[in-house]
Amino acid sequence: MSAQIIDGKGVAARLRKDLGEEVSQFREATGVVPHLAAILVGEDPASAVYVRNKQRACEKAGIKSTLHRLDAATTQVDLLELISGLNGDDSVHGILCQLPLPSQIDETTVLDSVTPIKDVDCFHPENVGLMVQGRPRYLPCTPAGCQRLIAEAGVETSGAHAVIVGRSEIVGKPMGMMLVQKGDVANATVTYAHSRTKNLAEITRQADILVAAIGKPNFIRGEMVKPGACVIDVGINRVDEKLVGDVDFDSVVGIAGSITPVPGGVGPMTIAMLLQNTLTAAKLQAE
Ligand SMILES: Nc1nc2c(c(=O)[nH]1)N[C@@H](CN(C=O)c1ccc(C(=O)N[C@@H](CCC(=O)O)C(=O)O)cc1)CN2
Image (cartoon, rainbow, N blue to C red):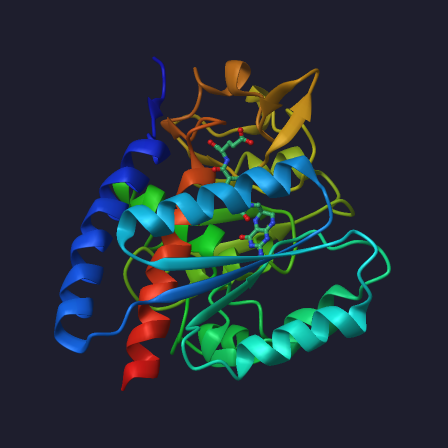
């Protein structure tokens, strides 16, 4: 038996269409145009593609987007000054600083400088704290996208064992926190695994839901997966000009019950969730 392929691209397109209708109702009712300011520092080609895709998705949904492109040699002071200006600009509802940043810039200092109400990536400690306490202002985009895909696959999360492989601040850690919460697509028993975990395969084989977010191409192989499990692949790795996930799709697809592809799985959902957060930001700031 082959796993159900979870069509992230299709789900994201549907969400973005619904969101476009919500944006148009909001604009009509308030006269306010939701506005996302994107910051791109340097010339990383993948980052440029992601930012362009975010801007296109905004335009299609009726959200204004402005791009602030900074040179790779930009200083942290210059970047902080730009963010400070955007924080104080009442026409801007969401601020997104594309990661990764060049090495001369401290990522934490920069992300902490975005005013929490405009932090549509949900990276600021205030927003992370609210999410962990189960009273989210925003949900982090990639984990929220994964959660929607798990729901789309019709997978029961309550009482399920979710194993998160990876402990990054933007995906692994918040993903586990969201699945352990009380609520819909939640109530799971969560295990975090990472590069120092012993007997990793023994742990991943216990997962009803396996989220791979370690940034290692094709790392999760068929023998590491429980038959029938829901496998969510967050990895985006370029190998020989090809895009591959953290999951070895070919060896896992015959064992898992459902699986996200790369490309066309989690990636497009990240962008859909960013639009959702931008509309939420505009609503909160119009109050
Ligand atoms: N400020 C942020 N920086 C980064 C984030 C983020 O959420 N906020 N996440 C990643 C990159 N990312 C969004 O920014 C992102 C990555 C991939 C995709 C996507 O749609 N991928 C496609 C394939 C696209 C391709 O050909 O490269 C897919 O998986 O189908 C969207 C967003 C790091 N930085």
